[in-house]
Length: 323
Image 1 (cartoon, rainbow, N blue to C red):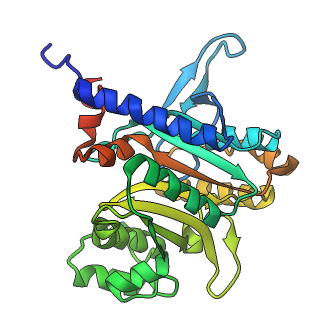
Image 2 (image 1 turned 60 degrees about the horizontal axis):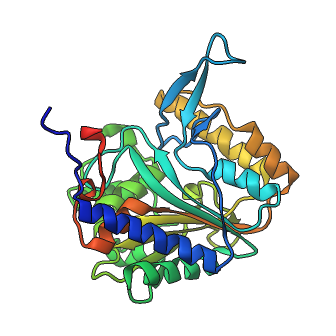
C-alpha cells in the first residue's frame, strides 16, 4: 500500500512531544497529580450527542461476553478518584467518539482533562487562560456570557427565545435544518450557534471564554439559580475552533441520576442505543465529591493552533483514514 507514511511530518511530531513536556511542567509546578484511568469502561456515554465505540470482553468472569466501551472522556473515572480523596489531578489520554471525523475531528483523539478541588469555574477559567498563554503565547483571554454572544450576533435572547423564534432566525439566515427539529428549542440553539456564531469566536488569536450556558445545555455542570438560571459551564474558542469545555462540577448524585435518566429517555426517542447509567460514578457522588471544577481540552487542536496548522490530519501521525 502507498499510504503507509504518517500524515504529520517528523517536525510536527517533535512539536507535539515538546508541547506535551510544557503541559506536564505546567501541572507539576502547580502540584497537580498526573493519573491514568482505563480507556475501556463498563459504561458508555448516556449523552445523546455522543456515540461510544463498543466492543465485547470475553475473558474470565464473562464467558459469554459483556460489552465494554472506549471512553469518550476519562471524566467518570477521574471523579471516582476525586471522591476517594485524590486531590487535584490531570490526565493526558486517548478518547474516542464514533462518527466524528473531519477538518477538526478524528474519532480517536488526545484529551487533556483536569480537576481542581476548591476552585470554582471562574478560577479554573483563569488557570486555563494561564495554560494557553504558556503554550500558545496568546494574549489574555476575553470573557463573555453565552447570552451576550448570542445577542451580539443574532439579536436574540438565548434564554427566552422560543423554538419558533429560533427557527425563524435560521430561515432568515438561510440555515437549513431537518424537519425533525420542529420547535426543539435546544436543537435550534445548537444549530444557530454552530453555523452562525462559532466561526467568529476567538478570531485574531485571542482566546474567548464563553460562560453561563442555558440550563438545557448544563451537561454535567451545576445550575446557578437566578433570573434566568444558568449552567456554570464554559467553553474556550480560538480562531473559531472550540478548544475546551469546563464545568463547575455537579456533586449531587440524585440530580445526576435524574439527568442520566433524561438522557436515556431522549436516546430512546431518537432511536439510539440504550446506555445504562454508571452506578459506580453515582455511588462515588453519593459518597461525596469535593467542591471542584473541571475542564477537558483537545490536545490535537491545541497543537493545531500552536503550529498555525489548518487541518487536524497534519498534526496526527495516523488519522483514521490511514490508521
